[in-house]
Amino acid sequence: MEKIKTLQKYIDESNSVVFFGGAGVSTESGIPDFRSVDGLYNMRYDYPPETILSHSFLYSNPKEFYRFYKDKLIYPDARPNAAHYKLAELERAGKLRAVVTQNIDGLHQAAGSKTVFELHGTLEKNYCVGCYKRYSQSELPLYEEYPRCTCGKMIRPDVVMYGEALDDDVVDGAINAIAGADLLIIAGTSMSVYPAAGLVQYFRGKHMVIVNRSKTAADEMCDLVICGSVGEVLGAIEVN
Image 1 (cartoon, helix red, strand yellow):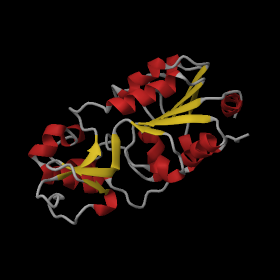
Image 2 (tube, helix red, strand yellow):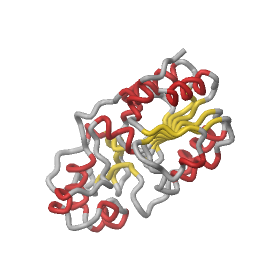
Image 3 (cartoon, one colour):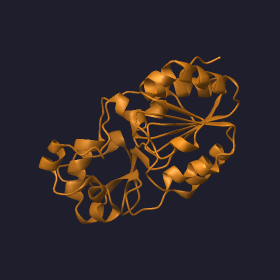
């Protein structure tokens, strides 16, 4: 495919690649995009996902939040796919400067990536809302309604809910990486979720590429638009 050959050329000629990814990267690992509300979802929940995943809902209705959390966010059997592994390989080869992700599943790190800016946090980390004691995913106590700390307060995932601000240090790191890149690869995202999508405006490099199964809000800004599977496209790239 000519477009993949062009992407290969861009990567070969680049010294500082940054990857900006969204939910479409993880769906290929079997993690569905919660925004794709199906009939089964409507039978199970009385609220839209954006409401359930909000700061106010978590604190006012933690039982219902954690029911959604276990049903829709936790996929213990999910494994990295070809896209995750290729990015880690590009980083080891000195080509990839950073991964900037909107995903919260930790699959980039599981594949071996080291420099990952998780804009929306990660389900791998949790903390008590009372004493701020930290818990990894595997350390969460068993619960029926919601997990409680040894101090008695609720434990919440260290993710950015609707109504909460992104972490300043993570955003600054992502901006610096994007601003210093000569190639920006955007993949698996509609580029419609802000403020995360707005970070690509800091790119000043040579080429911007987007890989997605459908049209996005960023297509017109890019030098190369590839419609297809992120895993298949990146999996076809050779690391030289």
